[in-house]
Image 1 (cartoon, rainbow, N blue to C red):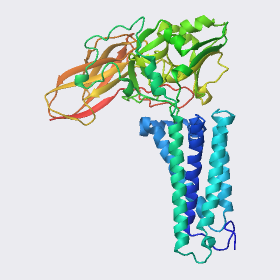
Image 2: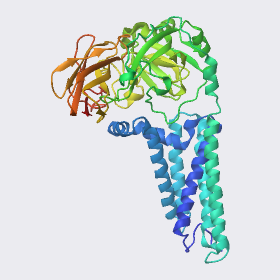
Image 3: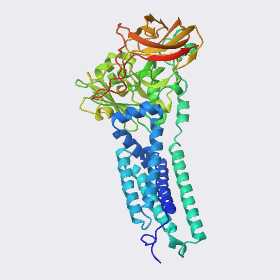
Image 4: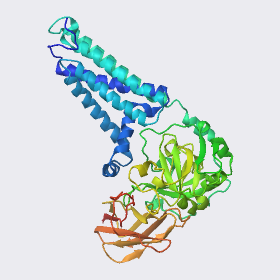
Length: 524
């Protein structure tokens, strides 16, 4: 009998495509399963390749993804990868109709790529077991199904009904096994009960509470957000395809580098320290004019400088590099950190609760007045005092992470109501929105309707200079279409820039967006 590995009689196109597709699925499922067993989700070749793709994505492409998919950019990437891998599997199968060799070689090549991606994720030697399992499963399933798909696999030529059924049953069994393995991997990776660990932290009551939010600080009845953003609604921007799972009881914070005495604290030790509370508005440098990537919370924790001073900061230190449990690094210029005083925090809670996992549980940094790419390390494990010779994640990718390149958060204003093309009953119309210029505060907001005179809006009560400020203006308008434009002034009287700059501008310095927002609506 002719071997199914090499035969002049080709496998049918349908069986060949199915063989490649199921083999790729089996490889992914096996990789997920072993990564879950090892409690190393990043060791899954699928996630490792996705993370490698994120690391290498050019800035214009990232901007496009953020602009078009928002916080769904990562699910979009995973879906896109799944489609590409499915097509790859079918093409490999079709290329192997006469011989299994092309398919086996292609699976080995993609297996090596997955192993290299896993190695890059710093999952340790054990992490390489996941791509090894994926490679073995992919090769094994491809060889097995290719043999069963072959016309001579049933012992007759052309194939009879039993041969077709046997291939179908084998394919379904392998596909179900792949799905079960993948689902098992996801379940195993989450067997670290972070939810229970978070509950065990208990209610966080600060020794030094933040001042209460005064009445009239926000106008949610008119369309603005509530002043404090619920934790579940707080914007999330990071590079992780999977949220790192770290229990509080396993977490430690090391202070290393250019210090007189390296220190290490357990989460329990930090939890037992006198806790301060700060109300802070955070903004992402990727936020468009009028965009949603700005939120406010009351963060509870320990002043960062208190911890750093315990270790003793040595002369010559220029930045504090935060290290995340997943290997991510982020640098905050030491001069800018010192300028914030005790407002910069090692935070363990937000809005009187422990941090949510997606926002950095068990602990993270929060430095007011700076965009997140130089101020917010989630899932924090280490603070390293060092010079600018050390290149954190974003600096390695061409962003400037040191003065004078690091810019304060730009003055911004956003019209929350009316929304675009909303139809309102008139003639009285109320425009409401939000403005922010962390570190300087907001002193005035002006609105202009249909290019007319600027009118000063009524401001909500100011909480502090590190938080946003709401505004509203009621005016009389005739029926028809109208356009309203907003501009804000910071606490020093500097006006928001009219020049429209979108997202991260060309060059090494991410500036943040600028420009006046306009909203078109209709009065009935």
